[in-house]
Length: 152
Image 1 (cartoon, rainbow, N blue to C red):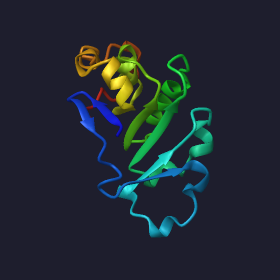
Image 2: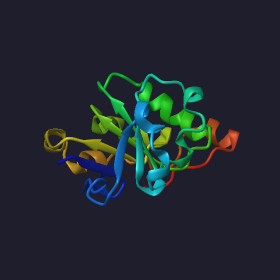
Image 3: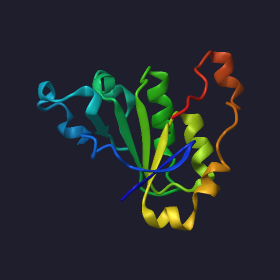
């Protein structure tokens, strides 16, 4: 079962158990009327442009962005752009992230990270918690009036 990393520590993923549904971007436009927006999450690839998503993410309560490799930073850029375009729902990173990237993920706009059990064993909760950003260190964000970090 996946482990969710938040500022409060490790938690079990309860999204689907509580009726939440992950929908691939290609299928998201289908049967929208039958879905509860508060229980809808979109899985979007990390290589799409924010412009191609306009209007799609408004009704999703969560967007999940994959990280196929810890060296692939496209998901960070996409998260930042989604926040700049006004997305206020939950952003979840999934995949190959390491504890050292947690602070950067939070600064870019992610609320949480989904990792597998193996990663949780290799990098225990204490390592992730040690990387929680204490404040938004980006003075550019403050100058531009962007919102500060929010708690998950």
